Amino acid sequence: MRNRPFRRPSLSAKPPAMRYVSTRGEAAPRDFESVLLAGLAEDGGLFLPETWPILLPEDWRALRGRPYPEIAAEIIGRFTGDTFEPGVLLSMCRDAYAGFTTPAVAPLVQLDERRFALELFHGPTLAFKDFALQLLGRMFDHVLARRGERITIVGATSGDTGSAAIEACRDRQNLDIVILHPEGRTSAVQRRQMTTVLSPNVRNLAVRGDFDNCQDLVKAMFNDAPFRAEMNLSAVNSINWARIAAQIPYYVYAALSLGAPEREVAFAVPTGNFGNVFAGWAARRMGLPVSSLIIGSNRNDILARWITANDMSAQPVVPSLSPSMDIQVSSNFERLLFELLGRDGAQTAATMRAFRETGTMPIPEEAWRNAAALFRGQAVSDEETIAEMRRLYAQGYAADPHTAAGTAASHAHAPDAPGTPIVIAATAHPAKFPDAVEQATGTRPALPPHMADLYEREERFSVLPNDLSAVQSAVRAHARRNAD
Ligand SMILES: Cc1ncc(COP(=O)(O)O)c(C=O)c1O
Ligand SMILES: N[C@@H](CCOP(=O)(O)O)C(=O)O
View 1: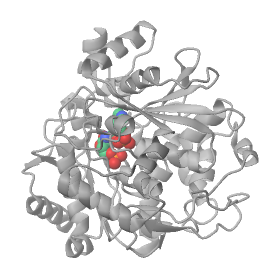
View 2 (view 1 turned 60 degrees about the vertical axis):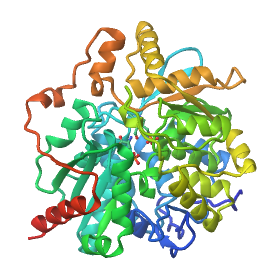
View 3 (view 1 turned 45 degrees about the horizontal axis):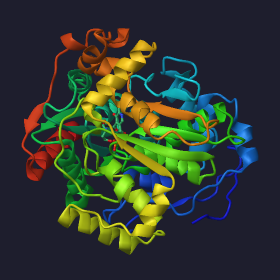
């Protein structure tokens, strides 16, 4: 499975060609720019690099100690080919992360002798999604202005992607954005972060259903070729490869801070759509010494069941205290599946089809064993989440319920080697989930100053049935109104 090493000395040199293939093997290979704009491949698959860039120990060492935006530009630059002129990606990264409230951008906070919280919630919308979406908004702007084109972005959210995407795309000249969220299934803070943005290019749709229904509607819009062409559709969910590429650098940053490449590091990641943890897998694929990837699920535990027992069977989505992980069909799992199946597009397509038709994914035993050697999985119930939040709070750390699922999973599956540090992805600020935090700790976290009046702001959104034609009509009306 290892590809030939691929090395690039610096961002000022001419970037090598980088092409992308679809996990379903039918779509023609594309370059980064076209993958950024297309989102989903025409055959319904997800894009992945044709070959993985590999960094050698001296390459990792050369990144150690550098500011976050420089590390980000170096890593993401391995994937962007010639899409950006020299220096442009670096200035976009500097600009994107300048809006974060800590100079470290992704600070590491020590929780115990071997555990560290990697705080990914210091961006404008207080969740890890800002890392990729602050950059994607700038990438879209740059590329669309050069091409003189306009796109319509459609996205599905269980709470955090929506607000991060809206914040990154609001008021941009060359795009409209429509975000679908499951009605009543996000926290009130998450909903208001989306629905109080009244910019003319933003539209919020509350779908009567769950997140999986919203994600299905988005995929169905992409798979409707005439509609896709008419609207010039693009994606901000992690089905878009650019999202994953922009989430790899914080794994690199954390591992280098804790002694890589000389030392292995484990990661525990609260997981829903499998995008975040897949970025960790990609970092390892590029040569970062990652010893294990520990997945924390809530009671929607399809991924934990798969890793422990090769049981990938979807159950109905049930609401939990960590609503952003209330997901059963994890879109990025398809990327891992493609890799586990030796990059066989036809087999990947057949496996995904079987999952659609039967609700169970037949994964060959050997492929599962290979995955189980790296991944660990733990389902964390609401009661366990509250207990973990309470335990952390007593030790002086306020965690949101998603982060607590990650720390709880890290206790269940700590690597055997005691010297291996475990980094827990702290994916959201506790203030996004005040009810859960208050239930666990007795203290209601305050919103940061830039959101202090969130509950006084006017909300605007439409409620729609879980119906493709109703959603398509709303998307079309939004795009037409802004095109006129
Ligand atoms: C706060 C939070 N934690 C964890 C997750 C799960 O991440 P992923 O969907 O990338 O697996 C999400 C949603 O994406 C989230 O918003
Ligand atoms: N948990 C996510 C769901 C969408 O995930 P994405 O990473 O594919 O955008 C959310 O908060 O919206």
